[in-house]
Amino acid sequence: IRESLVPPDALAAVFRAVARIPGVSVARHAVNAAGKPGIGVQQTFHGISEQLIFNPATYAFIGEREVVVAAGSGLPIGTVMDSTAILAAGVTSQPGQLPGS
Image (cartoon, rainbow, N blue to C red; front, side, top):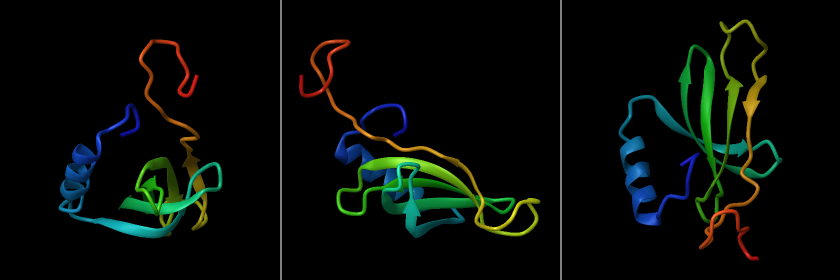
């Protein structure tokens, strides 16, 4: 989902599969690097929450982040270690063409 647009039916199948992975949970108040709020699907490993963030209305993928959520990593809880944002995405009929042009 980071590398290309995923058709809605396929994305729904991904969500169903991810929900079955042990330790996966929902972060209802995730924020991407651009400051847009979303819903995070997360898994915590060694005190670091790895989150995929989705638009709460459309469920479109809007970014990722890594956040310290537990002692033991050597960093203060709440430290954002990495964050990205998807600012725009679209489909075109020609290579090099921008969506909407």
